[in-house]
Image (cartoon, rainbow over all chains, first blue to last red; front, side, top):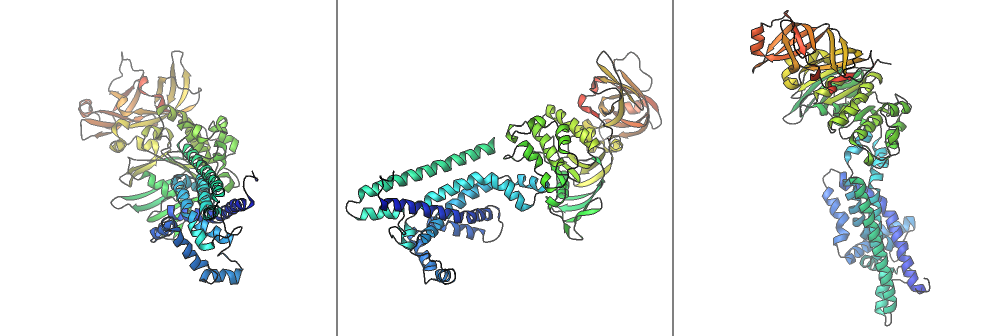
Length: 231
Length: 364
């Protein structure tokens, strides 16, 4: 397996996996919280929040990447703060790639989780309340287990999206081999040099395989969740 | 243990004004659909916040609009059995039963007793999806009991079940009423259930309490017949099994005399509650002979209520208790039925359905 891919190709695949995992691990709790607010919240401005969350889905990725650069660049307001106070640099680092990937995957995760939350019968939560469970406990023992398949499905879908993110990533963190060169960036780079097609094709296959696996897993979990609810 | 409710709530066009007290045993809240029954127990559970009023359990308030007290649901210690069971689909029966236990030090009854009383032992490892409607409802009752509630709320727990499943659960509810020792608010629009289960009856009409009091008193009041429904009107007698006859009849003793009914599944000596529909009682001025009906009870007319239509409801004294008979106004006039008149109430054995005979348990 390792012989099949050159070290450079491997680095791109490994970096993509790392970026995808970190992006999802860090943004998942936030996505659950946002989905909860969107599914259950009742306040003016809810639609605005909904629009904001979905914006990366609609905007050209290069715009998202540029906006990230404007916000999180070394001299940009938030980026400067992170660098000066917390010694964190995002622009042109793999951490920045993770941030860009997380933002692009966020709407997909929120949508999947929100659908799961909306399908939870609030009367079950009421029943748990009458049995003595506080709202937090109801969430942990009733809501969360019931939406778990939706969360997992959302996370898988988000992970696939994060791994394949290109436009925002290349704009925000560029395409530095071994540093910020993720799978799609590497494919793009290989296509720019003569004789790079073979490497590009291998990475394309890896990419297709990973995406298909993620989609199948997500679909399987969604179906399992539906079955449980209907039974 | 007692609970006191006095609330008002306006739904925009529909006003609920309910005030009543309930002690141990079953207090049935009876009324037509839309009369506000469920609203009342949702307010007791804290699932709905009434606009004004006060709800107290043993004197301490769960809700008091004047004092701005509105205890959250999970602190109210009310067990709630919903019409649709609402078992948690991702938990087994045992996990469902134990869900409320962690919030309390000690259940009112030991877990094993409740499992045994409700016949849940064979179901414990199953998931709710593998249960029948009746089984689900039994689990829901057990789950509510094991949360160590101060009172139990039941919202038409049998309404979604067919007759066979109802008959399966009613005996459990009777035992619960007589042995659990906690107040039960039981919402229903089915008089058969109410007549079997209730100790106290709260009659609701258009969002207001029309009457509240002991079940036997209200069911033997001719003035309430229109509200209860003419086909459902009928008083209840308490009786005791004396003999099982070899021809399939069971003989009961009530204060007004002996009753022969089709086989009742209860040991001699067991106390029972028997509901006799008003339209199943025939009246005769003289002791009839040569008729097929087996039960002829000596009674005294106490009240005659002429209806707006062709019917009349007659309240009869029968020993220490009362019966209601529904006859035509023509007969009532022809027979000269007036208070104080002695006559005979004729009841066909087969007119008392099995579902109208309920068990009473000694409070142990």
